[in-house]
Image 1 (tube, helix red, strand yellow):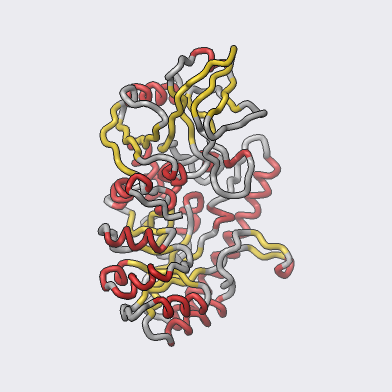
Image 2 (spheres, rainbow, N blue to C red; image 1 turned 90 degrees about the vertical axis):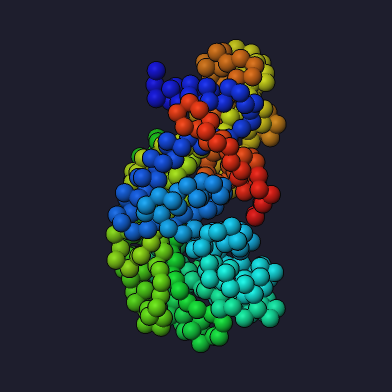
Length: 400
C-alpha cells in the first residue's frame, strides 16, 4: 500500500460516520509542517498568516508551539475580532478603508495595543484620522516595502503590485510623516516577496521555465536583501524604536530568515500545504487540509460523478487554480467539464472501484480559501476524528 493509499484508508475510517461534503485537517501533517517551518526559520519567530488558516482553533494551536509569535491578518474587521478574542499581536497585512473599524480601534485601548495597521500612503493616514470619531488612542503603524524586481531601468517589473514605496528614501519620507503626526506610532516594516515565496520553481514537465524561475528568484533575493537592509537603516534613523521587520513567505522562509535586517518571518500556507506548494525546491510539506465530495453517479466505465467540487482559488484564472483530485490516486477531471458547482465528473481506472456514497478526497489550490466553503473542520489524528472546530465561516464571519 502506498503512503497516499494509507492516508485514504485512514481518512475514510475516521470519517465513516460523517457524510460528505466535508473538510478535514490531518493534525499529524499540520504539526509536522509547523516543525519544518520553524526549522527553516532558524530561530526567528514566525508570524502566522491567518488568511491561510481561517480557523481560530488552529491559529491557537500553532501559536502555542515554540517558534511562532503573532498573527498576520487580512482585514481590519478580522483584526479587531481576533484581538477581542484574545490574540494580542495582530499585524494587518493590507491597507484598509474600513472607517467604522478605525473608529473602533482608536476608541479602545486594548484593540489599539494589539493591532498594527498597514500604510504605504499619507492618504491612508488621513482616512484613519477622519474616521477616529473622537477616539484618541495611538494607532500602531507598519510601512510596506514594494519588493518587486525592476530591470532595464524599471521597464521590466517582476512581482506583485502592492506598495508604491520602493526605495529607502520613499520609506524614510513616509516614516517622517508618521513621526510628525500625532496619534500614530511607527512600529514595523513589512516586505512580502511574493515572486520568490509564491511562485513554484520546479513545475513538473516544464524544466526550462523552472530553471528560468530559479534564476529570477536568485537575482530577486540578492537585490531585495541589499535594498531591504538599506530601507531598514533609513527607517530606523527616523524611528529608532522600530519593533519588527517582517518578511518572507512559506517557500522563502530560510532565505529571508538569513537576512540580518529581518526580525520575523511570515508564513501560513505551509501549515496546510495546498497543491500550489507542490512545485518548490525549497521545501517539501505534507498535505494537511483536504475536502471530500461524495460519489453520486456512475455514468459509465471509468467515470464517476461527485457532488460539487468547483472551488477555484483566487489569482489569474488557469488550471493551477483548480482543486486537484487526490485520493484515490489516478482520477482526473473530464477536460470538457472540469470541476462544477453542483457536480464533477471524474475519469480514470479507480472510478470503477468507487460506489455510490464513497468519498473522493481533493486538495484545494490555495490554503485558507477552502475554509470559505465549509463551516467546520474535522481534525484527524491517526484514523480518528478527535475534534470538530468552526472555521471563520462557521463562526459567522466572511471577512472578504
